[in-house]
Image 1 (cartoon, one colour):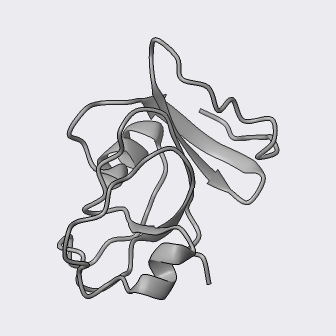
Image 2 (image 1 turned 135 degrees about the horizontal axis):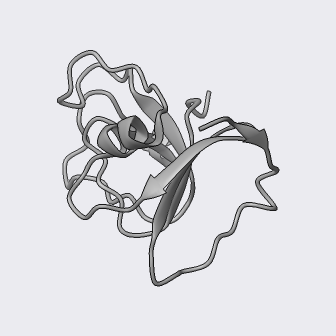
Length: 112
């Protein structure tokens, strides 16, 4: 799948009968895939042909930090060491443990 340019404003942010997980880098759509309940953001990214770096796969290191632009990726009750309150306020999520709920748009860059 080749990436094409799309702005965040043009990205469809509506609930559909077939939810989609989209991966962007800034305004560029890198890939998208059908939502699969229970899969992490990293697993969805792999399905979309998008590489998100991971190291620990337990939420400890923060290597896989992304920015949630739209949708829901619930946080664990106790934040893992790779996240803090400030980063959460900036919409940071850890892709290795983040499990989306339906349509989600993610910038693969951390909110730093």
